[in-house]
Image 1: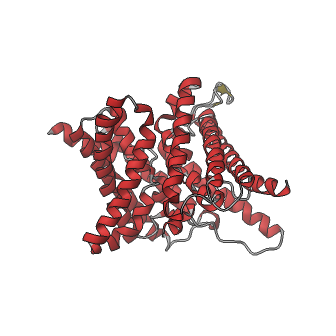
Image 2: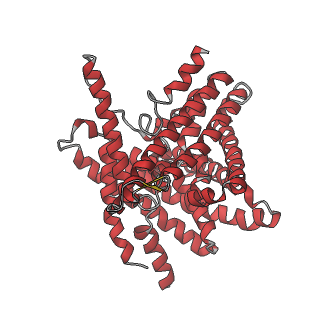
Image 3: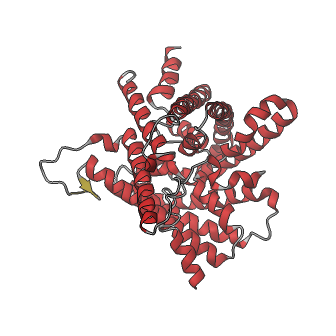
Length: 223
Length: 192
C-alpha cells in the first residue's frame, strides 16, 4: 500500500510529467488556450495512460522483447480509438475543440515512455498507481497552464469573467508564440524554486533537468 | 500551378507545422542542440512524412472507406507509420549505408514524432487529392526542418552568452521558439 502511494505521488510533484520530465509537449502547447481544454485533454490522457500501463504490465512476461514497442503502440492506439468514440458520443464539443490532438495521444511520449520505463518492469497494481499519478500530474499542469493563458488572454476562467470590465485581453497569450514563451517561463520558474529549496537545505544548486529527445526511454530500448 | 505554389508556401511559412500548429515539439526541442543533428533529423522527417502520407492516403481511400472502418483511422495510420519506419531503416542499412549512418539514429524516434502522424491526419481532414496530399506533406516536412535548423543555429549561439541559471537549457529554448513563432506569425497576412 505504501509502495503504491509512493508510485502514485511521484507523478504529482517529483516527476511532474511536462515540467520535470519534459515529455509530450505538443498537447501541452496546443490545447491550453483555455483551462477546460487542458482539463479535458488531461482526463483523456489519464484514461489512456492508466489502462495502457495496466495492459502492458499484464502482458509484460508474454511479449517477446523484439516486438514489444509495436505491441505497446497497438495497445495505446486501441485505447485512443476507444477514447475518440467515447468523446464523440458524450463530449462532442470538447472533441471538436481538441481536434487531431485526441488521435495524437497515441504518439504522446508519456504513454510509450511510461510503458517502456515503468509498466514493462513492474506488477499491475504499481503500474496502475504510476499511470494514475502521472496522468493526474499531467492534467494538473495542463489545467494550470490553460488557466494562466485563459485569464490573461480572454480575461475568463473556465468561461467565467474574472478580470473585471476594464480589462483589455492580452491576445499574445492565446496565440502560438504566447504558448511557447509561457511554457518556457514556467519551466524556468520550476527550476528556480527547486534550487531555492535546495539552497534552504544547504545543498549546492543543481543543473537544470536536461531534455534530450530520447528522454522517453524508447530509444535506448530500441537498440 | 499557382495553387500548388500557394499550398507549399502556406505549409512552410504560414501554417508552419511546429511554430503555428504545435506538432512535433519534442524532437524540435530535443534535437536542436547542434546544427548537424538538427539537419539529420529534419531530413529524416521530410523523407518519412512524404512517404507515410502517400501510403496512409492510399490506405484510407482504398481500404478503410470501402470497408466502412473510418473509425479505425488512428490505429491503422500509426501501424502503417511504425512498419514503414522499420522498413526504411532496414532498406537504408542494406542499400545505402552512408545515408543510414547519417539518418539511422533518428529513424526510431520518428515513429513517436507527432508531426508525421499529424500531417497524415491533417491531409485527411482537409480532404486533399493524392497529388496535393504528397506536396503538402513534403512542404510541411520542409517547414519542420527549417524551424529545427534555425532554432539549432540560435541555440548554438546561446551557449556563448550569459543566461539566467534557471532558464538555461530547455526553458530558454522554448522562449526562443516563441520568438521565432512570433516572427512566423507575421507571414499570416501574406497569404489569405
